[in-house]
Amino acid sequence: IGGHPTGGQESVRPEGVRSILAVASGKGGVGKSTVSSNLAVALARQGRRVGLLDADIHGPSLPRMMGVNQRPASPDGKTIEPLRAHGVTLMSIGLMLEEDKAVVWRGPMLMGALQQMLSQVQWGDLDVLIVDLPPGTGDVQLTLCQRAAPTGALVVSTPQDVALLDARKAIDMFRTLKTPVLGLIENMSVFHCPECGHEAHIFGHGGVRAEAEKLNIPFLAALPIDLETRLAGDAGTPVAAGEGPMAEAYLALASRLIE
Ligand code: ADP
Image (tube, rainbow, N blue to C red):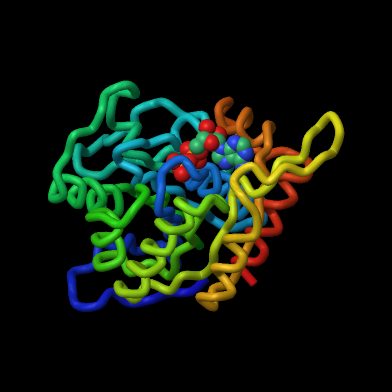
């Protein structure tokens, strides 16, 4: 993961951040935040200095998944001190809002919030800042790509046709914005029955890999539907922080990205 200059517009890229990795999806609920948080923890376990920015302004879920809920401090009223959890430096718009309040913001306000989180948060020196984007192709994606020049984007999809259809739009958006798509990740790809070992393809099978091949984008991982992943996320300690096959899978994904 290396650097990449902003084209034309004034940059809001934090100074000490070597690379920015955007995590995107076409549709909500496919596991984008789960992948972002686990990948951040896995990269940190491998000795990288990792930041995680929750830019999913309409549905911030990273505070819960990372087990933090305190409001970040702003001693000087201008800069914001990020939080730390599981070895990761963390900031979420969700930490500035009350948990059960809906956000009804228009485009310019969304863009302002993102820029503030990039430029006013004291990220410090990071090898990689992972940005968990909102689903779809909107103002936040546009602002990030134009103003912070991400090194690349990962696109998360389930194998379901509707998710894949929207993932294609997200890939197309990144191509238009000249942000390299570093890979596709299939989440909820298969369910291994813990009782009988049977494999069930609940959302379909093979679609994301085939799409990656068609578009000539690396296929980075197929992550199963996994109870432990869901429980760990709800409990605020990502599965990648522990031991076992899912932690291994995320560590392998992290290794592939820093190859
Ligand atoms: P998104 O960020 O795309 O909206 P989330 O990461 O919030 O999606 O995931 C939606 C829900 O699905 C969460 O409750 C999460 O715990 C669960 N989930 C995500 N990935 C998996 C998985 N591989 N196995 C089981 N549950 C998952």
